[in-house]
Length: 399
Image (cartoon, rainbow, N blue to C red; front, side):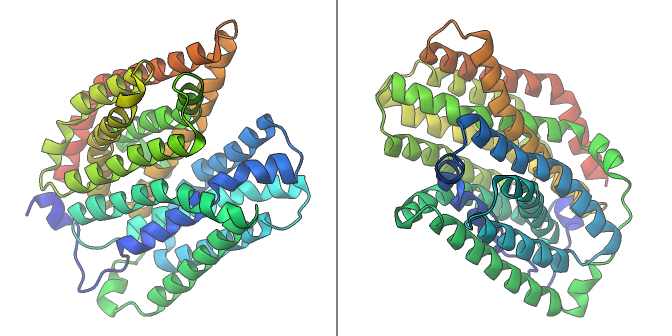
């Protein structure tokens, strides 16, 4: 067992299982297919208003998650706070299915973003066992829920626009009750690890983890823009149906989850870090290849893209997990999720920038331009930060 794994204490029973992580992500992702009908059909909005609604949730995640993580580190009781946040998220989700005024709906959206990502961050911070267990099981469970949530939401949408919100709210409420029971039934030994932690401010923690946080943000930037850019390209150039496009995204994310699970089982964080640059180069190349791949090669290319994304994400999560074993556990892991949310917020804005700068070109040309640009950016960021990531891994080993 490596020094990093020994630094991550194991208890007699796990406070948080991968199932809880899966549930925390599955609920919000179930509502994704229903957002268009909610904003455009029920609230008579425009596509711009829909994008603004999604952005409001991401903004709540970016701001709220680190603040909640810092609060949990300072006061302790991570699972108890996670249970309360899950209850708040369930309430907001259920209210979203009600006939609320549009301004009220928008005011609730940042609360949803902060609460849902706050719950996920606190679950990661409460995950017990080795560093390998957190990366392989926790990380893979979260990504698997990303893949399956929209498919579940699409199926539930057949029963009405509010059905995904009701199902997601019920699931998150159930998670809240389970977490509250877990928080009350902790053994004395487990409660030791829920004590307040001194680990520095949010800014200090972010500075120590700047390289892995920036890498995750750059990768999520590519994913955030890929959703719209690939969908447009697949429909206009390849003639894919909506169902086929959804299957393509599921392929990407399932490969991502499997890759994270396999890589997370490695005992050596420094070895994982050696995959970051080649993984980023292959990730960028596969993104660019999507812009010109024939229809029969699109699904394999997406699978390669997901596997290469794991080569970047798994080492970053391992570094942050190793850092959080000794200090600012919830703050560190909430910053990781906030960085991902920031990337997902900026990705669609990058797509909009491509639309503006290339407005004289066809839709197909603009989509291809974004895919290539996002691939180049991801590879460039990884190459520029390779030394800093290696140093972060060495510092983690020293902690």
